[in-house]
Amino acid sequence: MTTLANTSVTIDPIRWPDVAYIPGSVKAVAAQRVAQSLFFRAVQRLPIRVHLPAGRVIGGAAHDPHAPEMTVHQLRPFVRRIGDSGLIGFGESYLAGEWDSSRLADLIAAFAQGVDDLVPAPLKRLRSAYLRRQPTATRPSTENSRSNVEKHYDLSNDMFATFLDESMTYSSALFDSPDEGPADPAELVAAQHAKIDRMLDEGRVGPDTRVLEIGTGWGELALRAAQRGARVHSITLSREQLAWARAKAQAAGVGDRVDIELADYRTVRGTYDAVLSVEMIEAVGLEFLPTYFSTLRSALRPGGRAVVQAITMPHHRMLETRNTYTWIHKYIFPGGALPSLEILESTAVASGLRTGSTLSMGQSYARTLDAWAERFAAATDRLESLGFDEVFRRMWVFYLRYSEGGFRSGYLDVHQLTYDAP
Picture 1 (cartoon, rainbow, N blue to C red):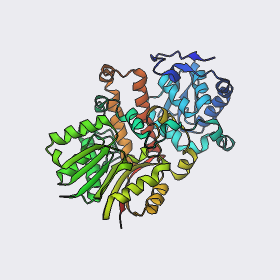
Picture 2 (cartoon, rainbow, N blue to C red):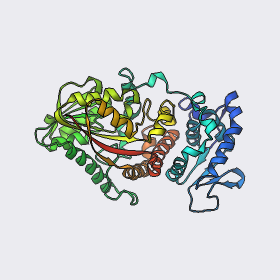
Picture 3 (cartoon, one colour):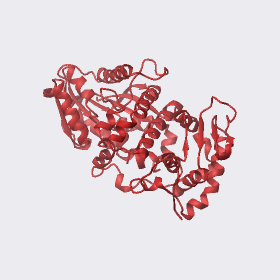
Picture 4 (cartoon, helix red, strand yellow):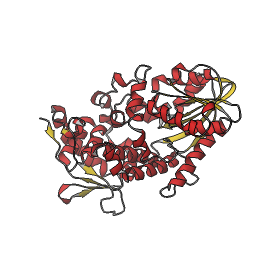
């Protein structure tokens, strides 16, 4: 029997049914005890502290007051959700308020560092049969890609403005000192411009350069390219970003050199001196990587150059999880997939491109995400006035800190990758 979650978090059961209700299927009930055993086994091997109801503390660092901690308020629904849907349930339990952490990114980093050893090998082999596969409706085909993008990027420009810097750049910055503490607003803007300027330098963007940008964002890269004298054709599938970026270019006085179009990358025509794409490849899907790189190749004139900023994961983890339906798919990025460096290189070469320089920026992304999460957490009143309820706010805190933990642990990385057309 399915029961309503009973926590201090206010949950709208119509908007958030899978958060509001504790799974009550035969599968969930049967898996509850196994999930609890696996969870206890896992945390005993990790450098964390887990506070359980009734005051019990477990974990590989149970007696270390400086270790990342997790407080489980309601154990039974927490482990039942995990038993029912794995890491999706882990995230939904956080959204429901069944557990918390004062150092969420550090906690996630600890889990990520031990991820390969958390589940016994026999159970790993059952993963594909037990966990859900990605729904066909979010497969990033030409028919579905716009709706996938709209579900994330068209939430609200005002919402994104609560945590992004004044340039509205929604991708990893490039810090000189990524291991330093929280970045102030001026540092974040400077680091975002450093990232963009490096891409423009790698792409040899200057006066009269013809530039194609795949994935406009809110227009800062196109603006800075145009300020160098380039002519920019930028494409996006987000109507919200389209309107913002067009107005931004006009206000900066470069509207005559920036053409922004609502279009899919598969429809690109013409040739360019440079093709730039910042953290858009994650929405392409692994099966469409050959199409994406063929688009880059056909869009470049002979001797042209492409620069791609891509979030990556280790190759063996990509292979293990490539068909898995995750919490990120369900709540943040439908249809997305993170590639490995190996698959990016092999696909680029197969398309006729030559691989060039590679810059790893993972710790810069961790610092970027920390700055975003701090700003987002401080914007509760503004977010509430925009209509985003408590579950949504917990969802985005979890997403930002979950991602930060992935980069801090090295489970995730982000690279600027340069490719040349013969």
